Amino acid sequence: MPQSRRTFLKATAAGIGFWTAPQGAPAADNSPAEKLNLAFVGVANRARGNIEGCAGQNVVALCDVDERYLARAATEFPRARAYNDWRKLLEQKDIDAVVISTADHTHAGPTLAAMQLGKHVYCEKPLTHNVREARLVSQMAGCMKVATQMGTQIHATENYRRVVELLRSGVIGSVQRIHVWVPTVWSGGGERPAATQPAPPEHLHWDLWLGPAPHRPYHPAYHPFGWRGWWDFGGGALADMACHHMDLSHWAFDLRHPLSVEAEGPQVHPDSCPRWLIVHYRYPGTKSHPPIHLTWYSGDKRPAELADLGKHKFGAGSLFIGDKGMLLADYDRRVLLPEEQFKDFKAPEPTIPNSIGHHQEWIKACKEGGPTTCNFDYAGALTETVLLGNVAYRSGRKLQWDAGKMTIPNAPQAERYLTREYRKGWEL
Image: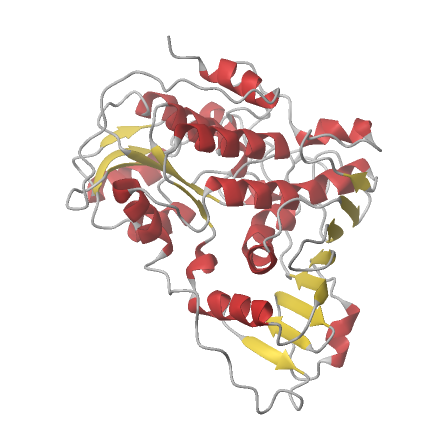
């Protein structure tokens, strides 16, 4: 008999690598000529970009907790069945693949449930709300052999490919130091809002939006945009932006799990994410590169080295420091420094093929098999690493991370921040 999702999760959490695929209706014919039957969990804001990115496929199901958003999407796709609860959506038998664009705290539930049913999944970044969820998602993806992709769309750009090629070419020598920064601020600002409305707006299914998070009264400070600033729903600027920017370092140097993580920021608040954060990640060396020390900055914090770069003042980006020079990059630009040293430099011929499109990579993999560049194995390790920064900050400890066992040997009390307490009925 097929195992339940909870049995699988308990088994994988214990390191047991077995799984039996669930029985159910066979998937539709996914030959290259066929269109996928797609379901969208979340249909507005960031989800709009994902719907547009998957244009040309069959939209058969739509889900949103906001009736206004759902009504607009249903007008655009009148043949799609509409739902407020993703659990009901997944009962629809003709779905081939699911695109999840909800708030962070509701990523893991539909992602795990969809994969258990043999559905391909595209999920927005960060892959999950906490470290444990990221590991469970990557493990189930490996067991179920479905096509997966995390929504780090910048990974598909031409500029990122050229930066990775430059770093791997050795033009700036051996890189042991990396700085990554963004000006982004996501913070609740302190205590939970005191003033609440008598009830949520009629168009909003508030209990479904809360999902696994502890119950609290509705307030517009949370929905639809402010949720990233609260621990129950998001993880501040680090969770929002680091999967985009640290992706470049992870890709170029094949980074996965750090050996240690240490963070500093304002005084920790139990509910609200910080206005700024500095996180130090130290990765082990490999045969191809020495140990790497990567530092993340958000809010108004910046690496001191930027003061010496003159006109090159990127609002957000990465600075790679090698023993033969430096490389400064963001989403669209790349500069070798000092410029005088590299004025006659000719870039190597491209070796990384241009992407057919971040969403199109996933659609192609759904139909034909084969990997995607931000599959849940790669994205799971990246998400774990990113979210460990919040664990270090909230615990106030430098963490020695045992990635294999998912433990913190030097500070076991910090392990409580690797997961969360799930509201009854929403447990994983």
